[in-house]
Length: 431
Ligand code: CMC
Image (cartoon, rainbow, N blue to C red; front, side):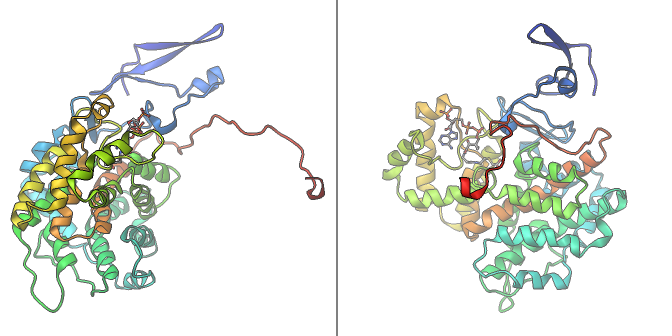
């Protein structure tokens, strides 16, 4: 951290406290309150961390007002257009764009780690067939710590490296197996002659009874979905991974924690929730009813796929995803799909409504990703697993960065206690 020449003065009663201010390479200044409690005896209060920086990071930067998302400085639209997922994984993990030989080596390493321990198949078979694939993934990824003992020592850089590669490589296999199990089809083993995205499509849609050819346009669209979800700064699931890791937990357990957090409908579960909402709306004539419900303070309903904590003008991932949606729908011959028609009209109706404009609510990445995934043939329950496998590299890059940070401490937030103060126990007959 640099630049402590600026300070902020906090006055409480008759006492004043000087707090250092740090200037980042991009984004707003940050006030260092680490010594506040020891000096002034007060905590700060920030539920939801709306104004709190919890760590230093050099991986991803978001400017929510400009709608800018940079990985190691490179804009997401350029990466989505010119790069591909495994190159972006390298960039996030190691901080620079690889030379051709480095990329080739990295791709080979990932490809050679895609199979999972054969005994792990029994884990899948322990779940009910109707289990949500995210539930299966939380369990199976956590169970990896029981299978890969040579990559759980977080103090050993080589083991950290192996754990990173294993997670990136095996997550598509695990997600595809969770899907196959849920529909009662045999597991399809990974194929090393296919690239990362094509291999995932193959593991999801191939069956032993007949040949399955991966369409290169679909593989490219899949790869783009992975790329657009690869990392997103200190969001809820990434912060969960960092918090779990701050106690020294092993990498597989930390990533399982991240998957659990991602599942919620306010986060990664929004892509499933959004498509289910579009199906529930059904036809464009019912849109005004749902817009009215989203605006009604007494109704918990929200327009899924709309709004973002950080983006307040547009989500740059949504712009690319929308283009991709057009390509895939044309290829699949479903441009006239009623869900798509509803989605397009809903988007227009919400953008034209003063409520959404005033609150700066725009379609986010999840508004379009579900439409593409449905057109590809994925059931809604697989949308969030696709997000989880894409985000694994972000979680693991942030985990690696955190472990190398000399300032790392166990995460331990404080609270504003509003409960009873000390009182004497009352015997049961006197209550
Ligand atoms: N529909 C209707 N009203 C909304 C919506 C929405 N989708 N999102 C926010 N608002 C309103 C909210 O009621 C609040 O109004 P008021 O100021 O009158 O109380 C105001 O906008 C601000 O909302 P907030 O909940 O304080 O904002 P937040 O930053 O805490 O929440 C969010 C961000 C993404 C959780 C929220 O916009 C939301 O629930 N969206 C729907 C779920 C969704 O699409 N999530 C995916 C996010 S992108 C993928 C990812 O990162 O996981």
